[in-house]
Every structure is written in C-alpha cells, then in structure tokens.
Amino acid sequence: MTTTAPVLLTSRPVTGTLRPVRRSYYDPTSAPGKGVVWEWESDGGSWTPYDMEVGIAIQQAYEKQRPWVDLTPIGFGYIVDFGTMGQINRQTQRQRRVRRRLDLVYPLVAGSLPKPQSWPPSPAPAPPCCCPQCVLVTSVKAAAAGAGPPRSGGPPSGAGKLPLRPGPGAQALARGPGKPAAQALRRPASSTAAGPLATPPGASSTPGRVALGTLNRNSLQRLAVAQSRVLIASGVPTVPVKNLNGSSPVSPALAGITGILMSAAGLPVCLTRPPKLVLHPPPVSKSEIKSIPGVSNTSRKTTKKQAKKGKTPEEVLRKYLQKVRHPPEEDCTICMERLTAPSGYKGPQPTVQPDIVGKLSRCGHAYHVYCLVAMYNNGNKDGSLQCPTCKTIYGVKTGTQPPGKMEYHLIPHSLPGHPDCKTIRIIYSIPPGIQGPEHPNPGKTFSARGFPRHCYLPDSEKGRKVLKLLLVAWDRRLIFAIGTSSTTGESDTVIWNEVHHKTEFGSNLTGHGYPDANYLDNVLAELAAQGISEDSSAQEKD
Image 1 (tube, rainbow, N blue to C red):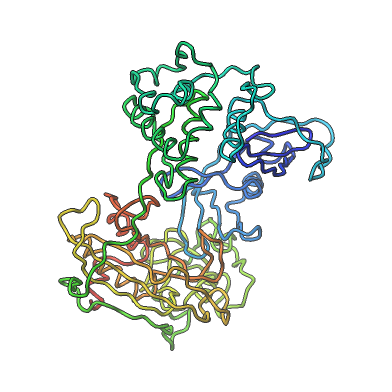
Image 2 (tube, rainbow, N blue to C red; image 1 turned 60 degrees about the horizontal axis):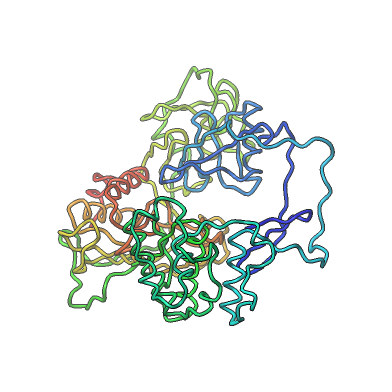
C-alpha cells in the first residue's frame, strides 16, 4: 500500500483502487495521549487491545479509582473489574484477564486541530509510484492484459533511478525464453539464503518484460513449482496460495507472477498449496453408524422448562444464606455500597429490609440480601444461585437454551491425534422461533444460523465422559443461548454458551479441530464452571 499527500488516500498498486484515510486526534490527558493501552486475553493466551474509545472509557474509570466499569453504555456487554483485573461477560458471566500497558506513545501535535480534508480529491492525476514493486506490477498488468511490451525495451520512466536486487525469479526471466524455466532455476540452494544474487553474464539487472510477456499460464505454473522446490530445499519460508493448480487460468498465473515479483524485489518466497479445511468425515452409511456403549439412546430433545413455582425468592435464598449480625467494613459487590449501610439497589423493591446482610454458606462472600433477591429476580428463577464474586453455584443451574434436538452416535473414522479409536459425532439441531420471557427480547423472533451443527469427540474413556456431561448440560439448557454472535455481529440469534465444541473433523485451521491434546481437559473445566461434574452425571439419567 502507498499513501499520497496532501489528501490522505491509500492506493492498492495491483488494482489501482483509491480509498480515503483519516487520522484521529486525542487529548494529551486521555489514554492514548498518555501512552496507555488496555488489552484483553484471548483463549489462546494472546493479548488484544480494546478499541480506542473503549480503552479511553476504561482508563477514565481507572483514574477515578472506581472498583469497576460497566461498558454497556458504549455498546459492549462487559464489566471490567479493576480489583481482579478481569473482564466479565454480563450475559454468560465468563471472565477474561485484562491488563494495562504504558509502553505505547503517540506523537504529539501542537496548535489547533487540522481541518478535515475533502474526498474525493481533485481530478489532477497523482504521479506514478517508482518503487521496484510498482514498476514490476505495471509491467505485469500490461502483459496480463495482452498489451505488447514497449518497442524501446527500456524500463518505465523513473525506474532506472531505483536499483533492483535480482532474485531467483529475475534470473529466470533474464535468461530469456530460449531456455526452459526449470533449467534456468537450477543453481546452488545456498544462493537463495545468501541474499541478492549476482546477475549472470550478459543478462540485464532488471527483469525482461519481453520474456514475461511470452510466458503463458502453463509456463508460469511450471516456473512457480520449480522455484518452490529450490526454495524449500534452501529453507525459505513458504507462503500458502489458494488454487495454485486451479482450473481457472487466473489463479495459477497470479500465483506464478506473485513469486516472480517478490523474488525480483529480493524477497525469498515459496508458493505452496495451503492445507484444506476438513469439516466433515467421509460419507458414512446407516449400517456403519452405531450407538455408544454405556450411553442409552442416540438422541435427546429439550423443550422449554418452566421454573419451579411455589417458592418465593426469599425462600430460595434462605437455603444458601447465613444471616450476618455484624457486617464487615467492606463493599457489597452487587450495589457497591458498604455492607454497613443500606443497599443501593434502586429497582423494583424486594420484600426484605435493605440493610440485612447475608453470607453464602459455602464460599463465605457477603452481600445485602436485598441485592441478592434483586439479582435472583433478574435471572432464570430456577431455584439456583451463583455467587457474583467467585461463581460458586448453589443448587442446579439451568440456562435459556431454546428447544431443539441433540443426536449422538459412533462413526468408523478416527480423529487426528486419536488414531486408536473411533469418533463420537454429535449433531445439534435448533430451529428459529420466538423468544420467551427468559430471553433478551421476549416476543421477538430469533434466528438459528449454521444448524444442524456437527461436533466431534474421540471415542475414548475421557471422550465418553465428556459426552455424558454434555448430555447433562443439554438437559439443563446450557449448551446454547440467545444473544449476539461474536463472529457475525448478528443479534437475537442462537450462540454457543461458553462450552467449546470441536466442529472440524479432519483439520484444525480455525482452532476448532484436532489434534488438540488439551481439549478434553479444557471442556471438562468449562462444564465444571457451569456446575456440571461427574456427580451431576450420576444424578441424571443417561
């Protein structure tokens, strides 16, 4: 990409497309002005910076010494807790680590902010770029479009001022069409790794445009393959290119041209075919599909389960709470008021007194009972309670998964990394429908994209253990939920509910496939976080 001035534009040399570019200015007292960056940790352990506006909001709350900040008003359904340095999903309660960096400094601008530039720019043409890559791209585009090479045989205007470092592709072209491409590329493997190559006697230091124009699709393809073999032998990193041998004449030609251009610019490159995405196993006949030993049936349906009636929220919470006569000098992490003061909750008024404090029996965290009743009323009202601090579950937690069907059986194929066992295939089917009172927008329709969804487990002892716990999670409506998709941004749609599944059968290009040595242990931990363990499996019917 190149950027022209004074109007900020970015142009793509290959297509000539122009797009506007803009700069944003921030106050020196803001997060970017101070070089502060807030980041969140992904599942893979990498750190991703928040969007600039989100980072500014987090930093403002941090500087005001607030214990936490709710990002919902700016369009993000998360809470950042500065005490634990964690990000909490308001819907699923899943936590991620966050961190604050101080090593990014933006340039300062003195004076008033510049006036925004108008776009599109004036019709005056910008001067052509004279870098070696653009010069080569211009010649390649002319050759690919069928235009003959210039009669003078010289380079475009300005090209002679910029020396080229001839690479393996340039050497092959400089030899002319008289010699086969594979023969032209036969040279010591060490020459590629040694940097710029010496130009053969009698050859020009720039790639010959006449030779490029005479290469047809098959020649370019053979040139790319021959070059790849030499470069692989010399240890040059490979660059996957899709459709290297595709039926269309465009893809292989562009693949060969890409290798030639990068080599001519002194950049070693090796074009290879990328690994294929394998989502599903080979076809399986009905006679090959078997039931899973130790697991009854091969499918299970779920419908909307009504909350247990007859008990008030106060009666439910009384089973899990111990009354605190002398509250400690600390905050209630629900309303953020001191436990020694009345609750700060301002919503619908529960029937309990706002100054009563209770302690959860197992984890020992204390809250205003007034706040706990309000939190319970905003949930599923299923007789369970989850501590908002440590996530300890009291009772049996259930979710808001819409009605659907779960199928499970054995197929006679092995997963990568599990060659000694067959595969458990799980098929989830959920149709679109109308949201109920427990969903984000009651009465509104919801979509169900990508169903039926196929998932895979190894038919090992631990794999069957995971399947049995997934059946418990399905019965408790914890596998799926209705919310906003993190991949498409679509709202009011069926999404995964914090229990990861493997949806790739024979590859792991997206991170949702095999081999993955830690997957079974990770999903057992995720199920335990939802209150599902081996004890739960023993209590439920297979």
